[in-house]
Structures are given as structure tokens and as C-alpha cells.
Image 1 (cartoon, helix red, strand yellow):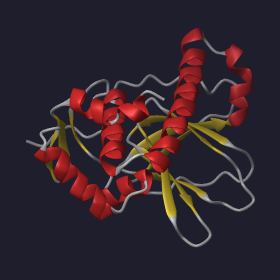
Image 2: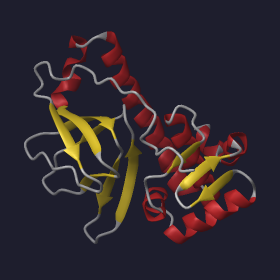
Image 3: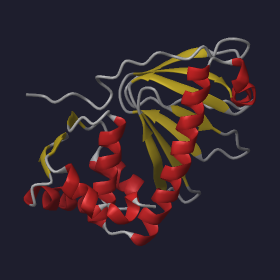
Image 4: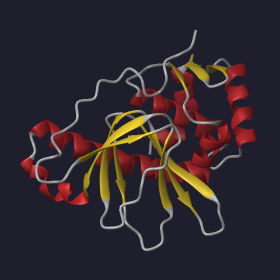
Length: 218
């Protein structure tokens, strides 16, 4: 039986970002790139689907900074030379508004203000952990942390259909796609997960937490 996709099962109520901030609904197709905003930085609230954010170097190397799910925010900065790209992993809908919305959080209700503030604090913590992940951890620790973080963001759900490829995961974790595949095999061999293509079930979250302990405790 096909497992629920990562973007399924979350009821997202959009905040009232339209009041004075020129909010706009954007619909993206599978693997469609989010258009750049040359005039200002953009704040995006994902309603459905999933987005990956990539950084492309001048020589063409790619690092995927993160995968974003319904209910989460993306802040894309305007640069003279564009190096940051957002791409839908499946049909995706977003609300776009100007970064200036962050300067007027007090105008919103408590729920909206708390949601935005909590998300950016979480993003900061994850950024610290990702730095450690890329510099001081092995492949098992990296993939274990990635899967645990994904499970938590999916409200504890242990089985889902991954929307990203092994190459996408590798570009996020600083690994080759071959290493990602081998590491999935090792995790499955030790009964941490069950993998069938992109269908994945986390069998032992406590064991994964032990593997990722050095990263999670930062």
C-alpha cells in the first residue's frame, strides 16, 4: 500500500497576511521553480505541497539548505547575483508577502505572531545543528537526524512517501547519492527503518535518536 506523502495529513490555516502587505497566492507545478522577486525580499507561507531551497555556487555545485512543508515559512532574500533558488517537489501552493510583514508582527493576532516567531527560532536552531552535521558527523548520524527532524515536523508520523530523491537528500546532507542509498540500506539492516523505494517507515525512533544524539543535543 502506498504510504502518505510528506505533504499529506496537515490542516494548515493561513494567517491573515493580506492586511496591508499585498499578499498573493502562488500555485506551482511539480518541480516548478518559484519566480524571483527582484524588487524586495519575500516571505512565503506554504499551504500545501513541499519546497526545497537550493544554493548554487558559481562553479555549479549545489547545496540544498532545507525542505519545507505545509505550515512552514520561507524567507528569500533579494541579491544582486541570484544564487538562492526555491523549487516545488510536487504541486504546491504558497502565500507570498513582503518581508516588511516581519516589522509589523504586533498588528496580527497572537496565534499568527507566535507561529511566525516560533518558526524562525526553530530555523535558527536547525541552522546551528546543520553546521555541526556537515562538519562533524558521519553519514549514519546525518541521515538519522534528517529522518528524526522530518518525523517531528510531520507531527510524529513514522511512515510516509519521500518527495525528494536520494540526490536531493545527499545535496542537503553533504553526501553523494550513492552514500545516501548505502546508508539507508545500513539503517534498514539494523531495523531502524523499512525502505521500499521512496516509501519509508521509521521502525526505531529511539535508536535513530541515539545515532543522532550528538547533533540533537546541540
